[in-house]
Length: 50
Image (cartoon, rainbow, N blue to C red; front, side, top):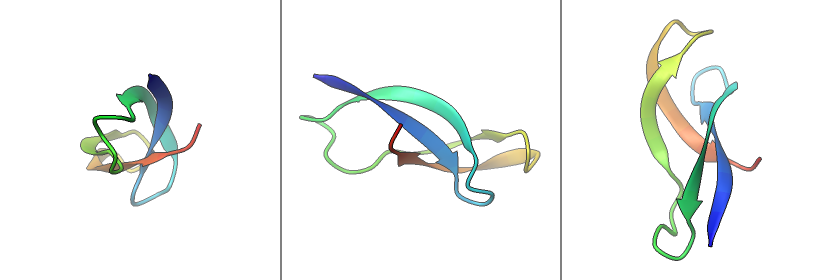
């Protein structure tokens, strides 16, 4: 039921985080504002395939 997805920085495109999501309840892509170590700041991270 829950699938593993990765979160990549929108600015530098590096994969920094992994999380799980329920595909039945959340059909659109995840988007969070998280810290990126290479950009050295809080940026938008979008869902990618793992």
